[in-house]
Image (cartoon, one colour):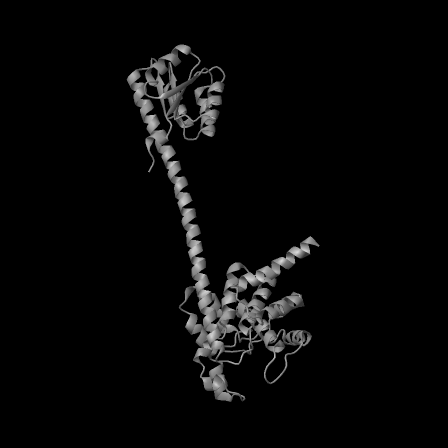
Length: 379
């Protein structure tokens, strides 16, 4: 992966004796680029300015021993390899030197062949350290790049899924008598309320998709029941009330819609347990389904129908309050009331307009929430 010439193999010789330095230079200079220093302090100064593959230092230096200097070298140049030499080195001192981080040690008189062999091994050790660091760096860089590419690909896939799901929901709406913009409203209303309740990113995603697909189970409801202009009889109501189960079955084998499927299955459950299809109550009902139940009821009340005009905001909120604790989660209703009325009006007006730009529901609501928050901070 890397060529040898890319790695500098400079050597630093530290000894207070000019004679010893000349002797080592005579042996090493023909093969390596060498520099010298007469003290630990001057040697460390050179290490601060330049990279050295190997540092050869006498143990007995005036102001600092070679062993004491090793931690300083490792701090300044973690990859540099330290070789100690001394006129007399006891076994105990040699062990201490190795424990301190020395690569090897030499005893005087210094033999050329021994010096060259040890330095050659030290340089190879230095190269391995540098190559390992470079490999680690490039590996991390590669992982980061691949992660970014994967995140982008997943975003594109998720965007494609959303476009497909929106198209499916629009097709479903042609079978039902929902008002114009209903799907967008219940999704953006749900997200706005989800923000108010402090849902995390994953929960908001589940809420968005669950609200979008809440009536997908109506695929399994016969047209004669779904589009019947008169009141449904008991048998027809039974078939209609199965649509949450149909929806859950449709979505259950799609991993990224697992959270959404719970909302689809439970969006007609009620806080007091009187809902359907299985009569869940209280916090046993998914929080996304509890949020959706409130905004769906709100949208139904304020929307115009063929047979009636929509109710006022005040009347709709009063009805939500009346049903808090029975049909709806009281805390969700409370959070709904904390959302400024103008937010609901902005989202409703947007759902009634024909637009050519493509914006995700998450982006629409996030822009509304954070732009208002920014204005509040400014003022």
